[in-house]
Image 1 (cartoon, helix red, strand yellow):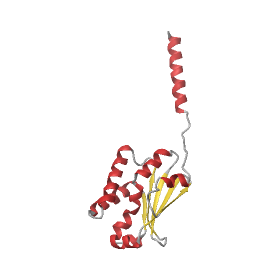
Image 2 (image 1 turned 60 degrees about the vertical axis):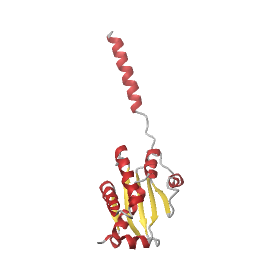
Image 3 (image 1 turned 90 degrees about the vertical axis):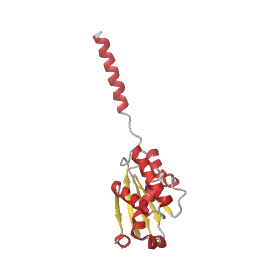
Image 4 (image 1 turned 120 degrees about the vertical axis):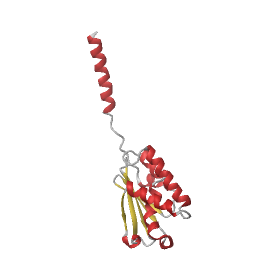
Length: 168
């Protein structure tokens, strides 16, 4: 009886040990694969920098003039908290982060935000998509939605703003 229990225990340990030893799939997308997730966005370019997807989006000068510091700060979060970003993280376990950089049409950087893998879980992704979706849909009429998105983003990303566009 003791031998049978010992063999069963040993077999269980081998199975559990083997399951824990499987290598992770740390595949990262190439530039074209990653860019395809954002294909519906114009004025966007994407490059892979190691295991980070770096997205550049042109923000119009008129929008920055009209919207002031708030529009300058909200720019990266509009694209970062999206179905496309969530899908990239889901589909490519080797992707460490997604960075969005907004620029003017002449290439001057306005803002950047980096979302690291694992920052958001299933529940917080749903909240992020909701906050960003409301800001995209109703932000021009309800500015507080844009402010909410900026606060949400600043609490969860590494970010930098160009003081030329964000000085109050």
